[in-house]
Length: 375
Image 1 (cartoon, rainbow, N blue to C red):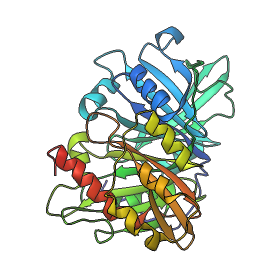
Image 2 (image 1 turned 180 degrees about the vertical axis):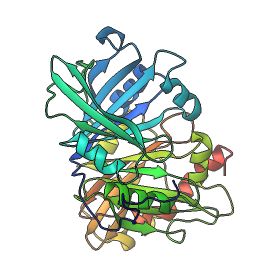
Image 3 (image 1 turned 180 degrees about the horizontal axis):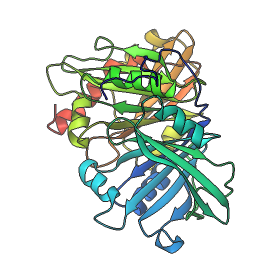
Image 4 (image 1 turned 60 degrees about the vertical axis):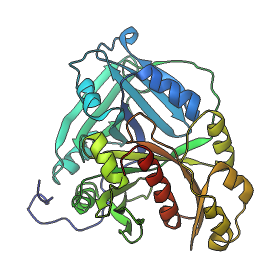
């Protein structure tokens, strides 16, 4: 589609909350080995495995695990057959996010509202039933091969969805409580298209805009616009590369992911110091900025509640704005390809995205790219 139009062919410009999205219901990863991926999120990030779907539960297509940490919910699925759609997706992209799902009160309404505004259908509203009731979904296509699923649960009392059965694993919580935002990477020249798509098709509004002057180093740059839904609970930054002397992190992602996709999930914690100590102990690998960053930190952000020496030890970044401050840290890629990663974030009033950390963070990313021979 070259442009998104309303049913009467006029551009939609009004901001709306017509979808009334309740939350991010779950994020669905398609992976090569669901059991191995489950173990990584369970033992590494402290997510609790709560349900399983597979051959033993009547699912002949794929093995799948549901994991939860606070309100953050992940689904990890791997195929049984090499001819499966999941197999083709994994061959092209490696492990990656296939679906971002939203809970709604009325799937039919959400599907009709978005497709009438120009969204392409992935599947029409469908019902799945078992002894726990009726589970209703529909899905639309977005950037790359990512889809958005609308989920209606009011008539379903099961643990997650049909064929999923409870599992009970011992659990050591790391403090992750919710999903803060999910970032999408798109090709050069496509950021504004997808910003308009989220506005016109889903009623999101633009919260922030960062250009190549905000997010750049000597060698590379990117541009980003942050979209949020009407309630402000769901935030989707959209990134595209900007021209630079060398390959940017977005271009590296697009090359190794073989196209656009969801680059990272930011996970909220209520105490990032405690969470980071646990994640380090669990073997999760994080980016490190130069030590000089911490020498300048007190003058740049002023007084904060946390111990600065511990922040430095744990590699946490801090940024401040008119509303407060935030603390954030970024993992290295969570699979072999240099594609998806995870951000851990704690907000102390700030609604921003760490603009003051961009330069130091990007230099750290470029160091890792150089080590991989991709800068």
